[in-house]
Length: 110
Image 1: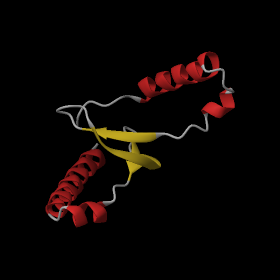
Image 2: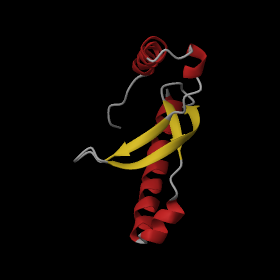
Image 3: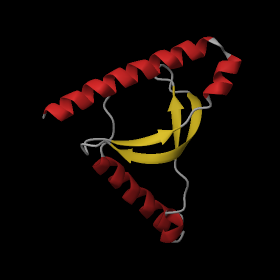
Image 4: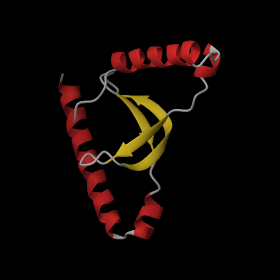
């Protein structure tokens, strides 16, 4: 997996964003907690956005070592526009299932 932000880094950002919202933007601190959060997917090669996803759920791995923001892509729409995408999505799903199974085996051994 690529390097990702830690919970501590995200918490620090949240604190900074709350300060900006209340001090600089002069908004009520309770309003900060109603700001929607989403995910922008960007190309690594040129940093251009390719998708804007809503966060549907937040989950934690069984061993407590990882937290996920779950976002859903409209795969049916993607496949309708470009049928070759289905094979790519199916392959990615299979790789994730295999990797997840290996990780669970490792966790269960420890």
